[in-house]
Image (cartoon, rainbow, N blue to C red; front, side, top):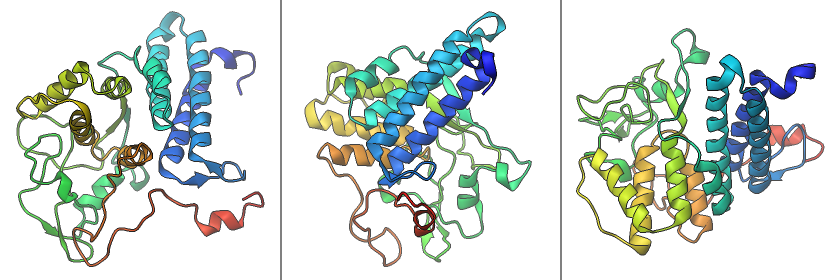
Length: 301
């Protein structure tokens, strides 16, 4: 890539780590997916490829950690550790998920940046919720909670199909959000936090199971929303932990991967029955499929 300096280049480390996140998104969302005209790769294989990229990125970033590069290299290492912990969690390896999550500092944040410069640089969620007929609405499970992390509009609006929906306001993982004060709208240049020390803590606590530490953690997240403390254990505690996770990572692309993970462990939280609006019903698919156009051009699929 960069010849002799590739093994200690921040640019190479950055490319490897972002590549890892690309594999994570494929592994979390798709039933299977080809890569570079390969045969269909299952989710577990895609997540393993993600972990390999993260490990490579950590090695290169560590070698680049000299002089003025120390802070930038450490930032990339934290980013890779969160990604690797996330990938291990999604594939069910709790011990390794905990190992990667543990070193990440609590205050760490990595953002996906958006801009008003052009449509390609706009926050796509903004388009879905701010248009005259929005097509993204809050599911009933996230409505009426009086939780600042998932602010709800005072009134519904007609959607693209004319059904009334509540288009989300700015949630806690979006730039400019505050726990107090009036709820804000999502703008074209609103950034989204996609890796953080908070996520690392969630992963570590989940890996350890329903312990006293999980009760403490859950209550710290409830306190952020002004909710009373709980004293739970066992399955009830895990259910509350999952609820807090859903609120903290609302509209960040984590939900599908979480639901697939819970279902694989025996707890199916996928919505069923009739859609909240309209006449359609939820189907049985729990992951995205590769479109025919991509299959037909791939001789190995």
